[in-house]
Amino acid sequence: MSLYMITDDLPVIGAQLQALHANLSQVLGTSLAPAMPIPAGGDCVSKMVAEYFCDHTVDYFGETVPGITHLLAGAEMLYPISADTGLCDASNGADITVARIA
Image 1 (cartoon, helix red, strand yellow):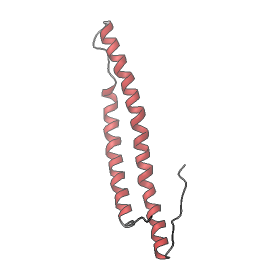
Image 2 (cartoon, rainbow, N blue to C red):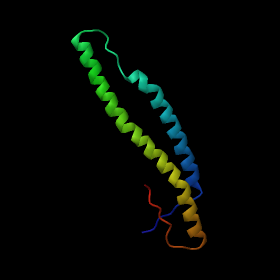
Image 3 (spheres, one colour):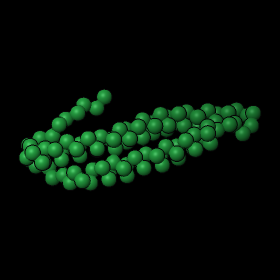
Image 4 (cartoon, rainbow, N blue to C red):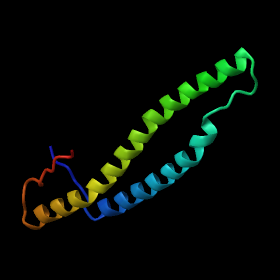
């Protein structure tokens, strides 16, 4: 099985993913405060609705924030992959250097 890769495109893709990360982080940052509801009144229904949405908000941001962190980590890994692949291509190597992501 062979894999054809245009190594010159990887840094460009990495830069696009980093820009996407910055935009998503800004959107999440501005939406966090409005996403935490305050009960509209002192009745039990208003309190229950606010509690439900608070739980939902915690679950939503608890899943979304790590995903955005993984997006940035993946974007940053494209630069060394491009460099390693380019070096192997220049020396007619059969494989690339593998780096373990912590």
